[in-house]
Amino acid sequence: MFDLTMNLSYEAIALLLFLSMGMLMLTGQRVFAAIGVTGAIAGFVLWGTGGHEMAFNASISLMHMFPMISLPLFIFMGYILSESGIANDLYRMFHVWFGGIPGGLALGTVGLMVLISAMNGLSVAGLAIGATIAMPEMLKRNYDKRMVTGIIQAGSSIGLMMPPSVVLVLYGMIARQPVNTLWLAGIGPALLLAVMLTLYIIIRCRLNPSLAPALPKEELDAIDPREKRRLLKNGLMPLVIILSVTGSFLSGLSSLVEASAVGALVSILAAWYKRSLTKKVMRIAMVQTLSVSCMFMWIMMAALCFSSVFDGLGAVHAIKNLFLQSWHLSPWEVLIVMQISFLILGMFLDDTAMLIIVAPLYIPLVKSLGFDPIWYGVLYTITCQVAYMTPPMGYNLFLMKAMAPKSITLSDIYSSILPVVSMLVLSLILVMIFPQIAMWLPNTVMGR
Image (cartoon, rainbow, N blue to C red):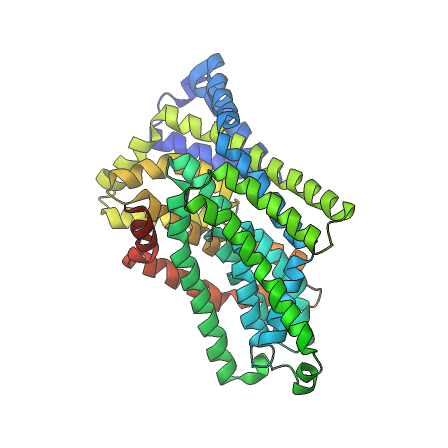
């Protein structure tokens, strides 16, 4: 079988591998199966009967990544907060305190997304809570459904950048970069996006108040002041959870794994304090944690198998030569080409699979071109979320359709993403032009 590839260049073999993987995905196979099978077969074809061992050993190396223990703990923490009703109380607080102004519930939704992201670190968690808790309430109040849909999708993207971002944890392990520095680098762009969303809501509602009417004064007056104070107190609970996780890690008091364990414990204590820690909540949280964690592990094992074939081919040098010598691109043009490739891959793959497949090729190239791998990790996360909301196969588009009320059609979802994708692209451009948006905080705190 080796003879089949003897006359092919490294670039042609790399292209053939990606095409093979894409064809398998088009058959409806699961992502990890398409990636892993392509890698295993390619190893056998290229290097004979011993070739499959390289891919196997690469996938098993995942078991030696000690920081991986933090992933199920962070995921468990997020599901406990969601299922115990803490997220509901948080939205109710925003509902009561911001509902009296035009667009107030939408502004509260952005605040909810920021706090949920800082407690969970997953984009899908913010999307699920926004679609199931915030969206029905806003639709009931006659908010424009397209504006609401776009805000929730954009707000969920903050979860990819805010500590404890699971994506940045994975990037840090693969790129061999400190996770605490990556988390600090993600805060500035995440807050930038939150501010842009806030301004977008305020300006649109000022120009057209009918898009997001304020709550009636009679309804606000009927709320007991004691209830307002109780909700405000409950709203402080997520801040305690956030500080217990990110504060202990970023201050150096705990390791990443220890911080994730503290977060899981504090979330259980918070649910117990709220008197909502039931057997049903624990069962749902554990089942969902197991399901999501296994998905991560299978995809990472398959993608490590696939990327080991690229390492064996020397594809990093081949791609560098293709960009710089054959195409005569400048370093910044190479960076833009890489981001475009992420946009295309993001229509078909989730961020984990995309990162593990492409990172072994791109991260060494980024370093050799003189770019900061911490800064590039932030660019990667922003580009991922743009890809997730880009038709026709954007990952978030179909998640939103599955979670949103039946009155929200796929056409509504597609038409809602233009302004929010524009904001994400603008934030990406700003971070590229002004790297200090991402790098000022880690440079200041870590003394880089």
